[in-house]
Image 1 (cartoon, rainbow, N blue to C red):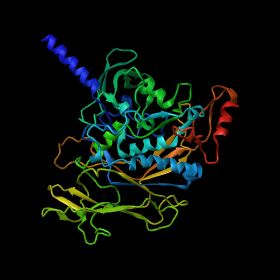
Image 2: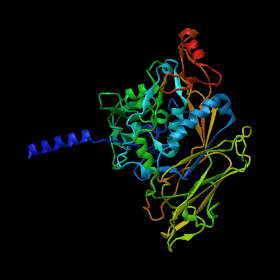
Image 3: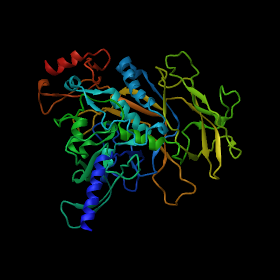
Image 4: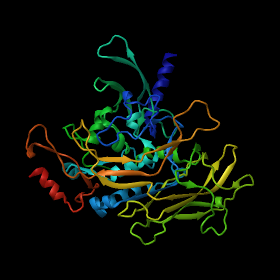
Length: 506
């Protein structure tokens, strides 16, 4: 029996070495039952001014954007600081997501996506530049409902104090909130990198964490999500080095950029937005049901696919870029399907793909002076199990995601300013009428109306004690760069790489 077990174990190890293993984490509101600061949830990061947006959700408790269309735009503060090149950088991040296929068209094993998309530009690294496109891509993926899997491969559910210990010691319950995108089982892998953990306890302030440690010999493959949300100080130090740079008083991630999303990012998107993922959820804020199809030639609502974005100010500088689309199929509803206003709550499947459409705000008022209308068809299952198919109409006066620039502040206990700030993050959960009386943490939707502010503090220096400029450490500067030999673009607009170089090396 022993030899049989050994042979079986050896075969299992060989199979594991030949099979890709992955993981993704889901983002949602903090579960008050256990996602507290004492267990290292919601603590401030050195990147974001509000710290974590939320906590990791369990299987089937995910939150996602509630519409197949996400409208984004730029205000005058962003365009004045970053200029056309900055807008183009964010548009490059949007293009990565818009170019994704329908999740039903992704291969079963997601082989078309790379395990590691992290790249470095040596010149940008020397100039201490942060890539605006990569940060935008990471932030948009968070808005879609994904959290950093490196952070939550292992995490705490509870801790209990051990009596008569000084300083106070604890016993711990460690859980996993990292899911394999193929099997949806809990996973210790992220993009084929295996993580174990080491318990960490801080006395002042008092909190604990299960710190992920990579078992792999090489550096771990950092997910694209990680740049925006991972608290790298509580993950493998090599992840910290990849994201923030060497620990020299000022953290960076200088010269790092992403060539696209990773295999696990794609798996998380597929899990969230597949049409078979039917959740009991509310429609986005500002939505109403009913209404006929524009340009449909009398077609019934459920023969129309796609979406339509109506901007009442054509030709204005904040007009729709790329426009909306309406398509038709030969599919018709059966006799048991009724047409009418969509119920406020009900069973909604994923749209299969999230489309990003740009509509800029009025440059003076920072909003739409005349509301923008979004229309799309959807099928909702009501509490009686009946499919209700209709058009959803959303009338919005501000983008679902607004890009801006601001001095977003400096943490009281860190040596650098925040790189970005977020406001307007809101989650809505609806209790399933046929579900358990025990309230779950989800599922639900991420509401529109988020403002993403990139820090426009400009070039800055970190000094220790009463020292001179030449003794200081230069902090990050926003830039745009790729894997070519082209000179990086630096911000604010009008600045040059040569000017940044002179500050560092002259």
